[in-house]
Length: 402
Image (tube, rainbow, N blue to C red; front, side, top):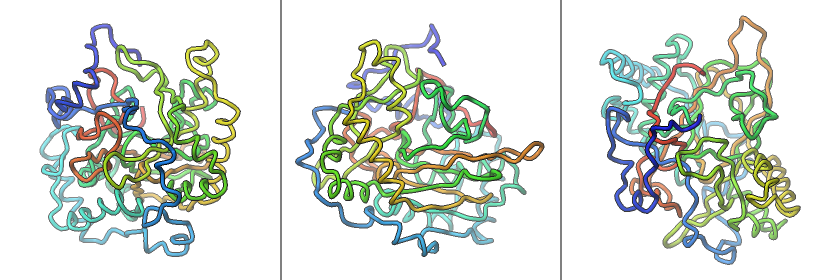
């Protein structure tokens, strides 16, 4: 979406970092009083050289599929009747209050009992293995509106929802809308049925709620980017080094505010700021390989043969190490984008009139001052860091894809 001619210029990064301007904005535009910060390049003077990175990462974030593939009880939680009843009551109360879904907060979606489970879960997703699969939300019985309210209400206990595209969608929809997946410089792959390669979204956490399944395919793969790092260090240290260098360009696909560039220069692996830094990852091959319209004009460097090889080996390594799971109707997958990469297989929908595969998606922010990772970006302390924000586009939460 092109910026409106009347749109104001975005706040300069140095002003945002000082005043956290996104944390206090006009509630007539942003009902919960917080604006998504949006996509930004890192603070290059805070990036660390490859030599500072660990040779091997240990601990719960560096898991292998062998740790979990035969033990689904370690990463699955089936909603109990009492949990569903509490979530249902909170959703009904929010709907009865008549407030916009974009204004939902923990205070407006109270879960006095289930919150006792969600609070330690939040830390486990941020700092531990980085994922969970909930099962058994009665989405068919509830319908899209109540399911969306319940889902976003649960999300408020894990992070702050951020905008996912230029339209301001804070409740996204993964659904095939018939768009051409080969037009990777324009089309977002979640709006197609094509394979999604291993990637991390522009948020700290991502959630997916299954509303309808496909006839075949559309299955989920997760991998610890810390385990991927360990394997690369052993098998391809030259690629590990290349992925720490800020020579990678990511496409913004036209989702830019006034005065912003159409791309971002960044790294794939970073170190946190401060003491005892962890390795943070940011990757999406569709956004890296779609920039030829700019590199052909000499505006940015083309991918080097070494970078093409690195991208190929990175994806092959992820695929080899991945944990496979299937989302059934009523399942919710939450995972970290900071140390987990995820993918999905291509899929085929049931023929009409059956509903198409449909996942509701949340992007959630976990700011530095509230237990989030210390990222080398100016908005690390913003409540809604990351995401995609075009000028002052207000947030919207449609109940279905549009």
